[in-house]
Length: 158
Image 1 (cartoon, one colour):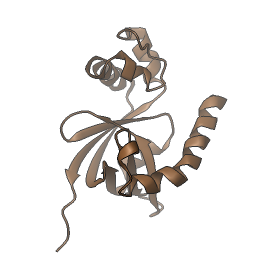
Image 2 (tube, one colour):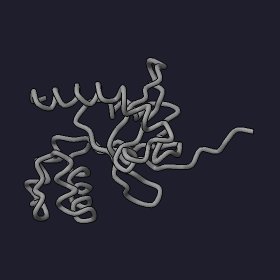
Image 3 (cartoon, helix red, strand yellow):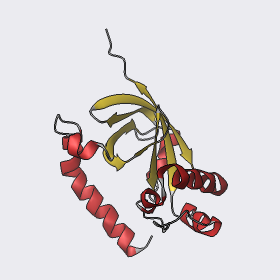
Image 4 (cartoon, helix red, strand yellow):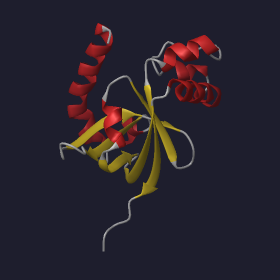
């Protein structure tokens, strides 16, 4: 991973100490239009993980997240996956998209639906002033894993 991406990841980890509690509080509104809290139990470790990640709304009950890190693979076997999105807790069924062809297809759809300026915000080298070319989508797809979360409201226990 390039040094600048590693520094950015460390910065996000440090910011998480402040951002996560804000996203879980009644003061979430300034941040929760772009960030959600992902919460899950690791299958092997049994450890509970909870951290903020960026998201984009996709379909009515779906959000997308993008990561250049390795943790998305752990979601394939994780348990008790939930997200806190705009102050609401949801059970989340993640689909980890790591096959190159599938990532290219979804990135192209993302750029069409959300527009080039939003696609540029993914920091994958996509242009912000036009739809990306096939080669730009291919290159961008090699830099990320895409997560599609299907969300269902948590029902309270009685």
